Image (tube, rainbow, N blue to C red; front, side, top):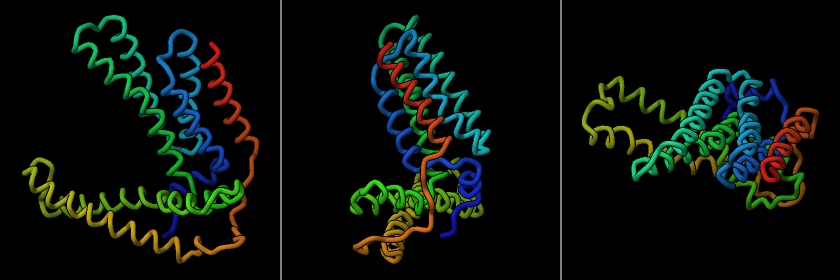
Length: 238
């Protein structure tokens, strides 16, 4: 399967090492779900949450970056307002929903950036450089191909059903039968095909493998890594 043009463009615009991307994703997960921030912690959390926005903009995904910024700022403002003024069961429910959304948005966007810009060959080379077991490398290598392929298949099914006049305004059973069932069948087939492709490319071969993809830490890795690490340290010590 050929890499997507957008993925190729992102890879050329900004060369972050795959290990840096994974580190940023893990760090954002740890900080976002740590505690309920207050005061200066909100600033440190905001600085860390700005990392996915900067990465999206640096790869030319301005629209996704703008949507992410609007969702994150709106979620934080709503959380602050509800914490101060909301009361009762409905207020508690709204606060919980807002908190979950404001926490998941940075994580989802960082994962979206990682999947859109991570090349499988680069990921495999980075994991082998870290001497990670191939029992871990192979499933994740298949996973990086799985989600983009499923998204393409879903769009193709939606287009086909739209041409046949089957939309979401119709019967829910028709949507389930003509959209969800074909997608589930495609997921099974795509998973098997990607696994077979991974084996065909020699991922199960024992011994040292060569990789034409050159990886290594650069200036941008240092900048984003230091940015995220500093924000995380300030979050926990403030």
